[in-house]
Image (cartoon, rainbow, N blue to C red; front, side, top):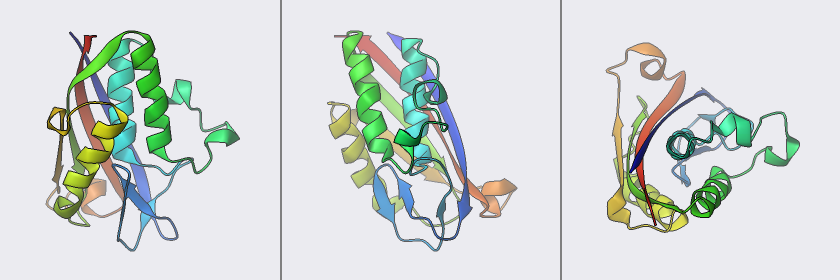
Length: 157
């Protein structure tokens, strides 16, 4: 078994869609980034790449490459899945947390879990997602941005 950890943060801005876990969420602001800036998927990708010993998403999907401009992070997760599959590993478990003051994310969590499980060819039971606020403390609490952290374990197939 191998273990990886991932972390990502993006700034909230007007004029962008808010996408988390591959789900478009109704909100007055979205996350700023080269891709769709899905912090949850980015944290999960980094955790998988870390478990594989393959560096981070910046190494594989640099923000200087226009082919990744506005790309769906779910497409990038598919590429990470392929790398994992090629190395002979499968997801054992993912545990992730999204830190955001607003919007409330509970209504979207099950769809996020399903989206991620489908791309990673695993059971939804192997993907856990939580959401929390910071009680209005820090950049998340001031609604300046959203962060996410993820831990994954992978096993040989």
